[in-house]
Image (tube, rainbow, N blue to C red):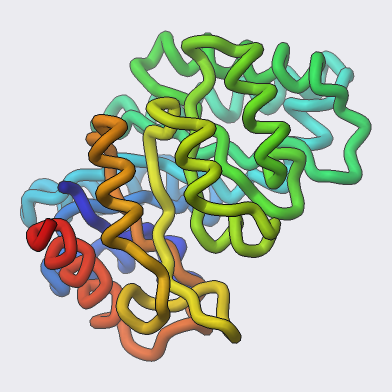
Length: 261
């Protein structure tokens, strides 16, 4: 089982500093959340690469800050904006190739957009085909304020996109969308290639693992039954935990649960 931490959890720490913190904590699996274009370019990526190599880390996924732009760029019907976003994302895919990173996390169009399902599928396929040239998989994340927040929309994507339908299941976003996490696991099945992990209780939808009451044992068992070999990536909001060691604590708790199954 791979369990790690997204640098999104450490915002607003600069990406290269976040990787150094994770290395010191002993985290060996990570997601790079780039909070600016410079965090996907040299010299910053070189600093990250140095830390990763020195500490035997792996960057399994890349999450761009540009997610809010996707509605009016990639999922618009304006050709110049679409090409501008494709140009930026080609650069990101190239960076991922250099870092050995395979999964690109996409939010997609927001709920208030005028993007039809047909256009969404067409644009997603365009991006997925572009990423494929770099050995990268584009994975749709369920996000509560996006079209992807609804399980029915994700099921439509799976039906229409065939092999290009790949998903990031984010537990806190399921909670915010009032979608059942285990229903999503059943419906999306082996199309899930990445997980964003957080715990929760009756009053909080995003907590460190072990600080809430979510049934991680059941999640791991159901994902194992699907043959899932992706990462369990801890992604918290900075306000939802106190010290950085809670991130490593979350990773260790996940591994402990997995070992006990």
